[in-house]
Structures are given as structure tokens and as C-alpha cells.
Length: 168
Image 1 (cartoon, rainbow, N blue to C red):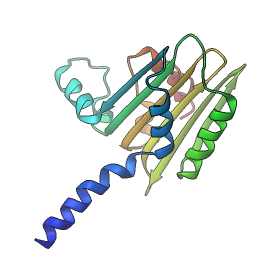
Image 2 (image 1 turned 90 degrees about the horizontal axis):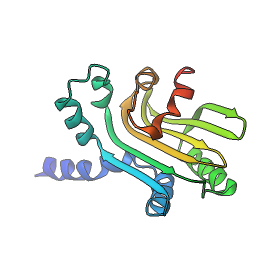
Image 3 (image 1 turned 135 degrees about the horizontal axis):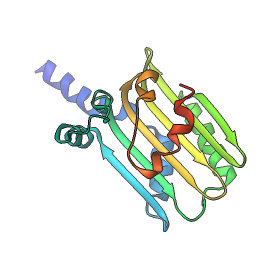
Image 4 (image 1 turned 30 degrees about the vertical axis):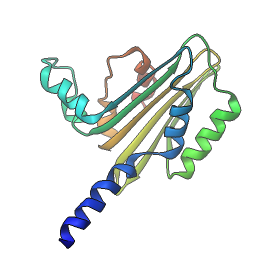
């Protein structure tokens, strides 16, 4: 009976470790806004798609390591103010994320931040921020930087990941 209670507590507690409060709060604030596209997939959905596809370019090994994928994009303009963006970055860093890559290309800014647990990346967040667009790509799971280099999302919102993949 004691083992059952411990198992139930662990089953409830473990899923919350990967969720970041600041990203979840930001995502929930904007996901229903007009001109916003949001994608929120649990890892089992990605695994199911990987199982049923014959696409040899799909990084199936990496997909098995992803437990949650969130993408939020603003189309036709960026509704996120500079202050909100700076606060979001600050809040994420308070949640033990570290900046891996920062790229500035004109008015576009790219940030890749990760959170690790014993040298295993549990969360990776990519931001693209410019006057015309904003993209948030959030991955939860258990992977390495090498795994992230093989990430090849076949969706328009993930095109910006190519800007930082070469630096990994």
C-alpha cells in the first residue's frame, strides 16, 4: 500500500517538472488572440505520427524523446511589447534556464534557452522576436544539444530554428 501511494504521488508530480510557469502563462495569455497560430502537442501524438510515417528524414529517435511541443506564432505583426519580451526572458532565466545562443539580425532577435537536469536537457525554448513577427517554440523531454541539432520540424513556424542549428 505504501508503494502504491508513493507511485501515485510521483505520477502526479513528475509531469509538472517539465512545465515552466512563465512559458505556460505567456502561451495561455496569447493563444486565443486574433492573428495567432498555436500548436500544442503531447509527446504521444508525435510518437504516433512517427510510427505511421515512412519519412526517412524524420528524426524518430529525437521524437521519442519529446514529451511536449508548443508553438505560438503571431501573423501580420508582433503584439508582444519589448517590455513583455524582456520580462519573459527574465522569468524564464529565474526558472533555471540558460541562454545557449543569442543572434541579432537587424531588428530580428533569436534566443535559444535550455534547462538541464544532470546534463540532460529537459526544456528547450526558441524565441524569434521582430517588429513583424513573434515565434515561441517550446520543447519538453529528455535530450541533448546533439539531438536538437537533428531537429527538423516540417512546419513554417519552425523555419527560424535553422538560424541557430548551425551554432549547436
